[in-house]
Length: 631
Image 1 (tube, one colour):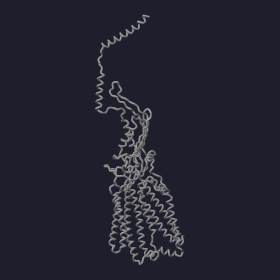
Image 2: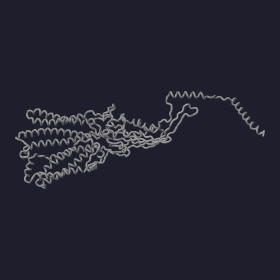
Image 3: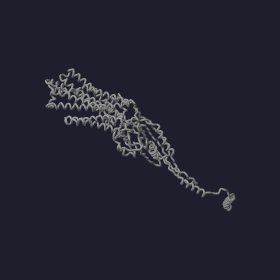
Image 4: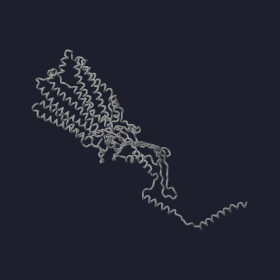
């Protein structure tokens, strides 16, 4: 994702500075050795052009390696560009203010919004997937807490464990083959089979550990690799079937009459010292496994795979329009919880649905899920862990330096072979089939073979030490609050009027909405982790949830904010402007004057009115008596 500058720093520093300086140091040594060979080539170009080209070839090799390590080391020490949008969101971010960033990071997210909702409602963590394969399940049985490690650490542990299983099977097959061949049970061809098989096992072990030394693929951040029975079958096939195939080949190409010639050729060939190399490979493998195991053990001790949430389910009866609930939640309650004013990550956008029914009644519903901007959580693994991590890094750098020295010796071994070959008159490849000629060349070929093999083996384990240290340097943990809000309910509308008295000069008519609110709020404090890198995509990698903790304090704070808003609402419209209030006062005074009446009683008028009323009643009585007398 792009770098978004903000004046408020999120506090994330470059974790690779020390690693970069160590890498640059051994890169400088290799660069100097490469320059030394190139200067040597310039001095010998007039003496022997062939030797000069050999020096140039190996000098360019060392120089390119040195410049690569030097450049990558310096690159790792440069400024770590962390913008306001880092790290990667857990799921697709629907925040309107992060639209472009969301499109860029959507291929790196580790979850879907529906998956996060299921994790919160179900109190589960789908990050911890079940191991796949026999060997993977065996390893997780031996190390139960390994299940709760980030994916790169789990894959690294499985890779080393699988390499050891393959190595042990190969060693058992090697011991059985040695017993069969060296005791004469394989016949006359046994002495020819075993050297070839020893060389094959040595190369196969190198292949096994070279594969284990490959850098952690970024795909390993999202998936757990498979480690099953087929890997064992592959090793058994190579270890046990190879002697039979070698024996068949020797019996096919060599008759019983030339077995002696083949033995003489084998004795004249360079000594491979396969047993020594197998021992060295096992020693290096044990050393890197020991360091990695300690680092892994220290990391396992910090495992706390808790999956708990703080939950609120209540019913509130309030005089408020349903839309006001969601507006207040989004614009006030959640906005007030931003970390360093960074917009919250919205994994489920708030989309309230209001369904109106007859006679001013209806229902409403809506839900949202947001994550507050994650903040860095330091990994406190102890001083001993830090020492082993530094030791792993320095051992790897020292081994890379030994590789450059081995390449230097390989250069001069190649020059010796070239000088000896040019002194032979004439020289052709057919001479290699003659035991006497091959015996003379054997020391030179053996020197090239051994220095080349040493450089290759040391490179493998130097890379393993470096990768192990880098893996534990790259992990960055974050702490954030994940909030899930779901609200359903019903509402009714009623009319309320004030100021309807005969003498009132102002009147206020309002529509009062009475809502029955049933919120479901889940608040958690999550611990997530990601694996950083150097370069443009330093934090553009999946972030996975390792721990889900309760956060009762934050839940109660959200509840109090919502209730205080609901209870502080005004249902009746009033005059808030001072000028309007003055105008209403003037109108009220005018009405008082127009309907004013005398306050002193007029007794004479009242008496006259009573007399007239009595006379009217007497006249009515007389009119009623006249018809009766006439009849």
